[in-house]
Amino acid sequence: MRRRSSLPVTFLVPTLAILLVLSMVPTLYAVVIALQNRELSAPGYSWVWFSNFVDLFADRRFLNAVWVSVKWEIVTVIATMVVAIGLGVLMFEVAGPRLRNFYCLLFIIPVLLPRVSAAFVWKFAYHPLYGIATYPYRLITGGLIFDPLSKPGTALFAVASVDVWQWGLFFAVIVLKLLETLPPQPIEAARLDHARRWQIHAYVTLPMLKAPLISLMFVKMIESLRSFDLIYVMTRGGPGVATETLDMYAFSQGFIESGKVSYASAMAVLMMIATVITFTMLWKRVQA
Amino acid sequence: MRPGRLVARAILALAGFLAVFPLVWTALNALKNNVDIITRVPKVIFTPTLANVSYILGRDSVLTGLYNSAVACGVAVLIGIVLGLPAAYAVARYPNRFAGDIQFFVLSLRFLPPVAVAIPLMVIWLQLGLYDTLPALIVTYSLLTISVIMWLAIPAFQGVPKEIEEAAFVDGYGAYAVFWRIALPVAARSLIGAIAFSFVLVWNEFLIALMLSSSNAKTLPIVASELSQQGMNVPWGILNASVVLLSLPPLLFLGVLSGFLNSVFRPKKS
Image 1 (cartoon, each protein chain N blue to C red):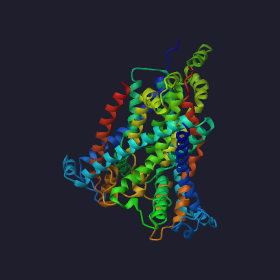
Image 2: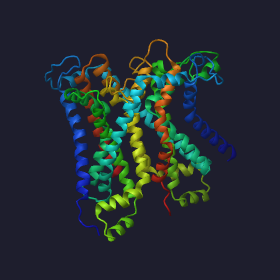
Image 3: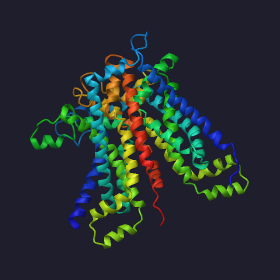
Image 4: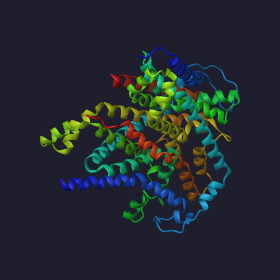
């Protein structure tokens, strides 16, 4: 039907060329810098090859950052999916069309906020003396202090709660929309068999949505890696190194503490290799 | 069934409350004097003041940040539209054996760690003498806007009924005319959603702006984060006002984006 046209070439080639240049130049250059010993304060540098990488594996703060990043991914991804599926199903079950629209609008608001804003909003809320989120605790205990952001045991969860506030509510909207796209017949059939409502969702609707839900989780895994702003504003990696993720540690090594740009870049390159391998494998599996 | 429903409704109402209340509280704090914020029992009734808001809007650093954010995000989104939409159309309508690989490549740009991109770019821009300038920021953001717009526009173009385009070809339209006059207008609603989404993403971006600017090209999120580091007496009211200012532009797109979600997840007609 369609004649041969120059359109695909003129439309695709310039864009892809620009994307390739914009992504490959910094990527390759990151590797180059990682193999040198550049520092922000000194102009000279030489090639040190893999010594930055060797040093990293002897650096206990780096190993801690890897562990914190893994914890962060697990906590935020699982909590987001649980909140999203829970609220999505609840909306589907008990809310009429108008109420659904209203909740959807409310639930999209947090994710639209810049993460810097979200981080500030909750940093105030978690303030031990004046915060609105810690007020109930002060009220019940008669003025005891609860300071989640400065305790090593709770800081990561306090920051993660903000991430889940932003993404879990947003994903609940998507889960609801996914449930709405399902054909009604299987649900009605299950209902005729006297299945309880939670059984219908656990055994009928959610298994039908397995593929989109896995894609959603995939998106969240990628987004969870971009939590730098949240942690930077709320805790700066503290208390101690309790919330220091890989990007936070790379940033403080490269810019705040010592200006060791090459050392930071080596860390970034390792992160890049790990994420590209992991997500490529996951993606191929999701597509298959 | 009844008590279960009641509990379910209560949970939903609580979630809705949690979604917006922290923001409402921030907006209220922006209108309070410091004494009304620093209270052990939260104050709901207070004498409002516009001092914080006018302080924020009167500061040069905030205005410069606002200007930088508007220019950097606006131009990057324009570049994203000009380069991303046609490319997405080509992938959607002229399938070839690379289509899958192209889509994966575009997605893979999203999982490059931002630090890994920002460190080398900082060194590159320093060497080119463009560090801390808007052009450097715009070029860097373009990578983000082009890939996001492409990613979201491919399904939008695929959603345009093929029959309309075929009919236009039969009427003697060329390939480019079909894109301009048929595909673009028909997909417009979803495309605007994709564009709004890319704007919100770059407006909210923090790490790259933080690393690629030191004084001249600072965007609003950076300025806002710096306000919190002034001295020992935290200016709570001012901080809250700057958070509100920073959050307003993305919230303007609330309607567009919720419409976009509705058009992406249209119930299948059975």
